[in-house]
Length: 246
Image (tube, rainbow, N blue to C red):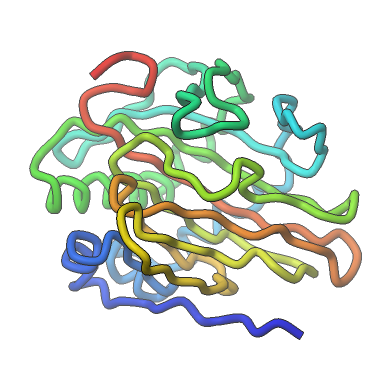
């Protein structure tokens, strides 16, 4: 039986330092709540939305294991505003499987966006990105994912180990049920070192410097009925969304 390695959690006050020096940082659920300044219950209020995600119709490997929603925002100076719904685009240099495609997904529910937990999380991430990189206008993409095991195996990152072509990436575990696998792996972009661990507690957050590290999550398999893994992935890019220049 494979061993699950626990995430190397940092403390909220050292989040920016760890991100700048190591290229990544992990907050445990209570650390995330403390850092955001709101109880975990505000995040838990978001969870039901993952039960109603529509299928991802753009999987080029022919899989049916992923459902998702997507939305875009601009974060600046502690304020967050929603921008008109738009396609998700990445260059092939960062996503060999789905790069070069304008993928239009169903939008995140407005009711979800209005939740205090959603607003607090996305705003806090904008602030920490600016604390590390300097004040910027951050172009934010939010992806709600459910990886399902109804067909046997689900692939959180079918493109393999990758970068996203942004400045920062947050991967937040919303929940996992009746599965094994889903190990997180991080590799230095320009070095030999790597880390591996499994996020098992809901609202554990991994924050990555996308230029410093490459990341992936291993496939999941069911250990009971209706096994799945839910995540919220948030990307922050200065100056423009991908595909818009900048």
